[in-house]
Amino acid sequence: MSFCRLIMMMATLAMASSVHGAEQPAVPKLATQICAACHGADGNSAVAMYPKIAGQFKPYTAKQLTEFKSGVRKSPVMTPIAATLSNDDITTLSTYFASQKQKPGKAKSNGAESAGAKIYQAGIPGLNVPACASCHGPAGAGIPAQFPRLAGQHAEYTVSQLKLFRSGERENDSAKMMRMIAARMTDQDMAAVADYIQGLQ
Image 1 (cartoon, rainbow, N blue to C red):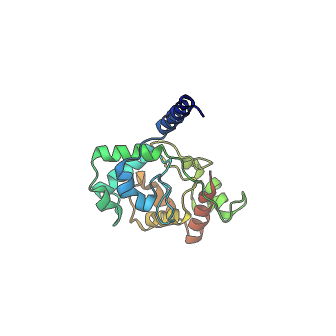
Image 2 (image 1 turned 90 degrees about the horizontal axis):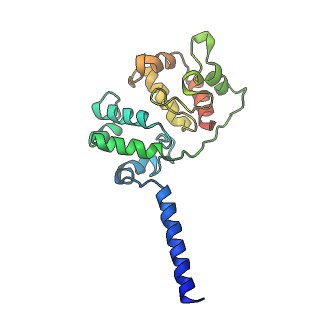
Image 3 (image 1 turned 30 degrees about the vertical axis):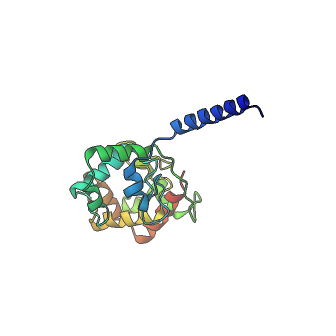
């Protein structure tokens, strides 16, 4: 191979690497130094007790971090972490994680006739539990700045949050909406709908 041809190939590879790198958003240091331990550097947590935050709406993530910081949303893990974040840090992190692609989950029982599917798509009429889909969308995509994306979320995390809403320990929901809904749900209802949500894409 001639020297000139080798130089041309190296230049082509360098350009390709540069273009590929430009397509990938820079990973903020905070994401690797603080967030990665629980949520993964790209927001796809490997541990089911910690939420996936990849692909979550920027306004929603920013709201949660701000409320952890202020104490409106309480957590022995997140409150001290959020307390160290500036408003710029919160904007940087919420923007970065919103740009990441969430890895899909898999439900144990995800058929259209499963108990979880019925609750998610139609609610529990006899108990005045509305369909989750009415706010979070038929496929769990959510509505930006209002209702978070749920699709693919770890079932264990979803159940834990529903129970916190039910007990009143989590109270940062608008107009007490989630607290009123969760109060009417049994543990079995929560487990079923959380499993269904985990399988949504």
